[in-house]
Length: 253
Image (cartoon, rainbow, N blue to C red; front, side, top):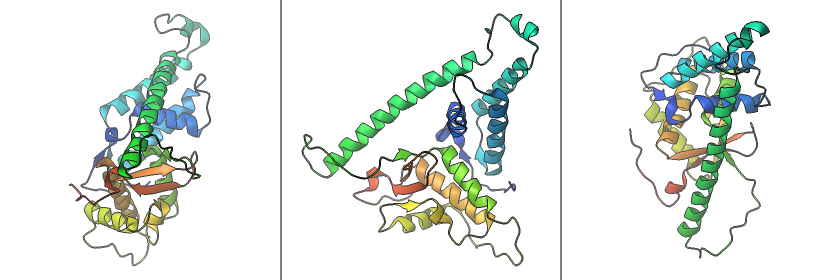
C-alpha cells in the first residue's frame, strides 16, 4: 500500500488490541483455534501491522510484543522434534500459552458484548418511554458491531480499486479529518444508516479515501457513530450512536 504522510494519527489500542487482531485472523481464515497454523498467522499479523502503519495508525508497543512472540513461537516450531522436546519449561506445544490467552480473551469479549447489548436495549426502551415490561420485537436481522480490522479489510478493497497515480489529479483543498467528519455526518442526516462503501463514492484520490477513513475512526472513537455488519465479513453499515438519537452534539477535536 502506498505510504501516506499525515499529521493526524489515531492510536490503534483505542479500538482493538493484538488479541483482537489474532481472533480476527482466526475467524477470517476459518482456523481451528486449538491448531493455529503459526506461520500463516504470523505472516498475516505482520502484514496488518504494515498496513496500519501506512495508514498512520499508531501501533502500540503491545502489538509489537505480540509480533515478537509470534515470531518466537514460529521459530520454536521449526526446530527438529528432538530439540523441541528438550525445552520442558514452555511445554510440548509452543502455541499452548497463546491458545489459552485467546480462549480467555474471547470469553471475556463475548460476555462484554452481551452486557453492552442489554445496556443498549434498555436505553432504547427508556428513550422511547415504553414500560420496562414491554417486549421489543423486530424482524430486522441482528447486527454485529464491526471491528477495526473489518474496517481495514474493507478499506483495502477500496484502495485496491483506486489507482495510485492519475494524470491531472486534483487534490481537494483544505483536506482535513475534521472536514471529512462533517461530510460523514451530513451523509447520515435523514438516514438511519449508510453503507461503508457509500462514504467513498466518487473519491478517486487515495489521500481523500484515507483521510475519510481516519475521519470515520475519529467519529467512532468519540462515540458519535457506530459500525455494524449483518453477517460475518458482510457489508458494513454506519449509523449514529444511540446517545445521539434524540439530539445533536458538537464534534470534539
